[in-house]
Image 1 (cartoon, rainbow, N blue to C red):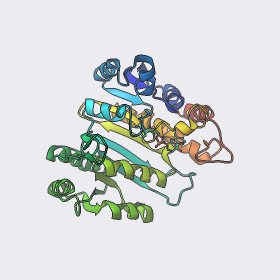
Image 2 (image 1 turned 135 degrees about the vertical axis):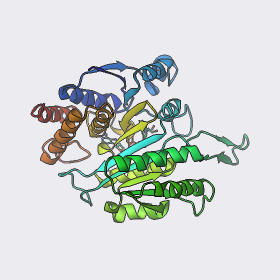
Image 3 (image 1 turned 90 degrees about the horizontal axis):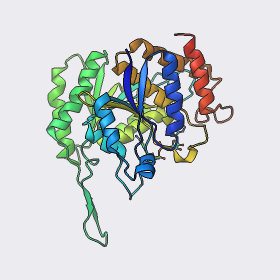
Image 4 (image 1 turned 120 degrees about the vertical axis):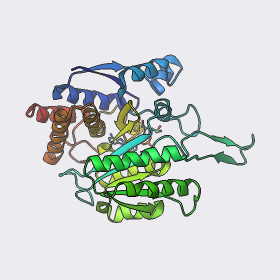
Length: 340
Ligand code: NAD
């Protein structure tokens, strides 16, 4: 079966890492017909629209997309296209795994945790303004709903049950944000007893940040609201070797967009030094979503072998003796060819 998938190369390091990821997917033998569309800065330059209708139509039709990172102007300019896409397709789950790889030296070993971040609500709703024209104050409204909290919490518990994970930790700031954080925590406590086989606990965000850098192995599935999830998932990626190794999936009911946790990395764009592993691991998640389990396992294993072998590592993983993005992808394809 040929899968028709939307491909958004993105900007910054996006085109370099999507080229590497699509090459690996091709070698895996999975038949994919890519529909390439532009969004963000590239679309702005070409069409004066950061989110052309063509992108929406393509994802609506294909239901699955692989996306390179998209730059969002800081403090001005157009709103995040990443956030807009999540909203457009109601992709309420942001699933971000962080897993240790043998051969990648970090402070901790055997980390295997997944952050489930609520992807649509709270401070990412875009309800914000200056209170007057002299910008004497600004206000951002973070809305948490029962429906939004319930569906992300249920997704995390159902995932834990399906994949035999042991524990779900709900993270919040309900001691201070008594209404928004309080509602999220209340719903977590209401739902948890429905899953007696899954251990449940909760942590206040500040304590969670400390616990994650002191003893990350205690965590399994972590479920939290949008902003905390965004920050904790970068923290989690730092525990396993950095942003170059952390994939993410934005999932809704029937549509999913797969991407790296990291952004467009303008500081290294166009230099052929970016690590494409995060987007390759996002492709692994995508294949699993498509039911191509065998190919997804083979790519993951080939990547794991390649990282463990350590002869072809990108600059972020070995600053002294490194290969380029394309050389990394070539070495990985050779490893994968042994398995297919
Ligand atoms: P970033 O993730 O782009 O980069 C942070 C640091 O990590 C940089 O030093 C960068 O060089 C390094 N890095 C990131 N990915 C790497 C890789 N694959 N290999 C090697 N090193 C890597 O974060 P930023 O600089 O804060 O953001 C840049 C832009 O990306 C901003 O416009 C931001 O809004 C956007 N962004 C987009 C997404 C997305 O598309 N989903 C996610 C996060 C940030």
